[in-house]
Amino acid sequence: MKLLVVVITAVAVSVAFWNGLAPGVDVEQRATITDGPVRTSYVVDGTRRRFSDEGRPTDTLKIHSATRWLNSDQTALGGIQYVTDGNSGEIWDIRASDGVFFEDINELALTNGVVIDEHAQEARMTTQAMRLLMDQKLATGEHKVVLTGRGSRTTGSAFRVDLRTNKATLIGDVQTNYE
Image 1 (spheres, rainbow, N blue to C red):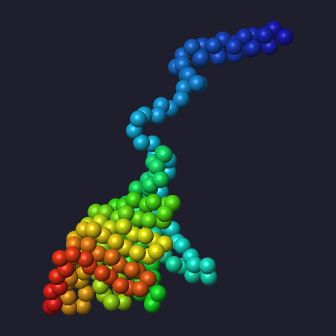
Image 2 (tube, one colour):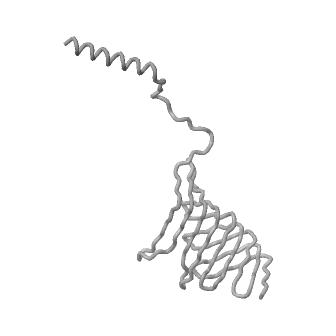
Image 3 (tube, rainbow, N blue to C red):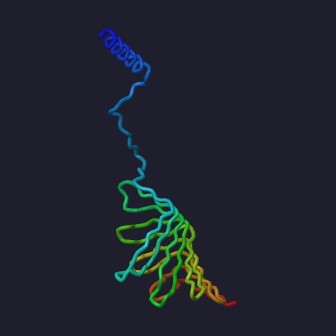
């Protein structure tokens, strides 16, 4: 019995001594939220595919990175590639370095150099920035645009591309050079 009392006393003294050496911890401590933006989600190397009612893929959005901030309806994207097809089987491949995704309206605002390729006609459009309305399959831009195709180069100050009907319209100061 004396041995049990000695062991219990030794353990109690050891615990008290150990707690005396350990730094104090405030269990009520909470993380401080600063005035800066707070990241609510982050994705690296993501792919989003949408399908028709018949189960056929309609478009694919690939991104290198995505960041969504607290109290924001926008997601900042990096390394963007959007691929969709037109009504007659055209394949549109749209790429940009940066952009913003508006999920509620399914729209992309692409920036930092945008390239639009239509593979069947071997056509390429380049511009600094554009908006892509994914539900309507419509791309619009109000920046200088260059359209190159088989044997021609056309420039304009704005554009509109209907990805469903394969129709591109260049607007303002349009000039075409043939090779």
